[in-house]
Image 1: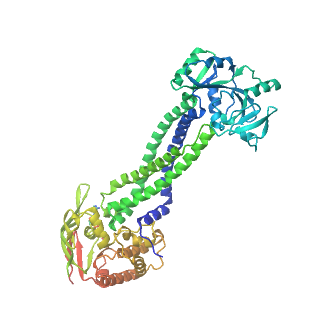
Image 2: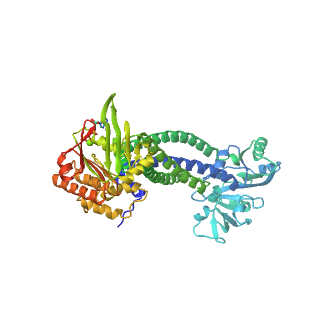
Image 3: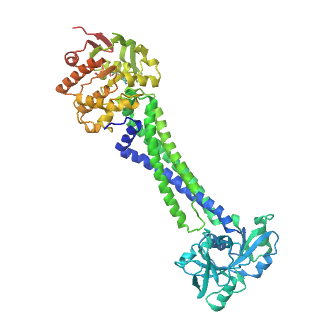
Length: 387
Length: 230
Ligand SMILES: Nc1ncnc2c1ncn2[C@@H]1O[C@H](COP(=O)(O)OP(=O)(O)OP(=O)(O)O)[C@@H](O)[C@H]1O
Ligand SMILES: [Mg+2]
């Protein structure tokens, strides 16, 4: 068997033999990259997901009863059940505002098990559900099922019959995933709601009540201005300007960003110091070895090549570990927020992976270069004698 | 025979806490190609200093070392490293194997940095190991060897790159008499077969004169060198 005399073999056997030294380096790089990955994943995912949310919703202004702004947002963003009502005649009045392109309303009817909401819509004006159901109009006696709500009914398909509050309904369509509160909803017509109210004493919504009014402003109208004007004109209502939605989440993010930048700065400084220290220790421990390599004909560049390759190799392993754990734990935390709108963005993930590896490699490469500069001027004999 | 190594007014002074310690002082010496030179001298005489200067492992305070007519201290780091790598085989007085590498990798170590390694490097490494009495040791790690065995790995390594010059500093310092004799035999054989310019340093006159049968013997004292004729 012929041994290959390639520098990389030298590097690998060094790494393998000095596993505790290699492990310390890998772990310290991994820790830094883990924090980086974890925080960036959470921050960037929530931010971009929120941006997408407004376009998914289809409406840019939402009107809710006064005081229901926050629960209204939760209703839309999260899979939570929130119940609030206002008079339906408000809808007829608000409809008259200038600058409205589309307007519809929805009414919260009740809740099935497991946070599945039943919501009544007005099929004539609806523009919110429509994009997710192949442009079908909902008829009396039919339901649209949200992408998550549908699972609640078990193994059913389009055209099957299901029972809601004791009444039979035909499944008109199963909606595509919207990553909003709609996924956890069952939609029926207003007419059916009125029937249900008559038949079922447990349903405590009245015929003349609605929960939300959803508006798409016209091109000439600024949605923010419209929201402001409606709220000013009708003290009984609050408006949610969808672009500004998720104030709670945004606050959480901005607080996180502050903590994050402090933590990241402190930990980077610490890890860089730690890594630089480890390298200096390693280099000192290896002075004799470096002296021998120099004496046997390795130039300063040759020595640098060996040590750089070694540290880059360890840096890649360390940052890969950091990235893997950062992504897993970050995703765990994001899913534990139970916000359907949160969506992993592969662009962000790939950027994190590339940046993480680059940072890990750069730090370990930097560490080894800095510690090598100190000894490259020392004569090989001195290094070998180990003074 | 051409001049292989020429040493001119070579001086090395080690500054030490404000005092100057003389390593070697004003040495002139010419060594011809294929010469087997022995250097004797007491501890602290400057033997290691002289050998290290010839191999460019330290820089002189004054003077020049010419190898094949080239002033080695005028070379760049790359060029000097290459010269060491291609022309010189070192055997150090100090432990010089890399413990984390296998025996064979230690022997092959200079070739990892060679521009073009000899094609028979693997068989040569095995032959050299056999000749220093380490047959079958190739896959053991250097840290698993005794001090004397490690020393013999370093001896084998000095010849791997088909060097033109061997600089051996106390090569048998920690070897028993039998092994010392074997190594001397190996040196004599290699020197003849490959026409090496060989400089061997020892404090033991018997090793230099009787075992290695050096063609020229020098004696060092307090940084000076004298030719020994008797
Ligand atoms: N790095 C150094 N700093 C200061 N003085 C040194 C240094 N290296 C060697 N010397 C001094 O230079 C002189 C020559 O040392 P050298 O190592 O060449 O001796 P040597 O003949 O090889 O001795 P030995 O047989 O003990 O190996 C000694 O007096 C030594 O103390
Ligand atoms: Mg010495």
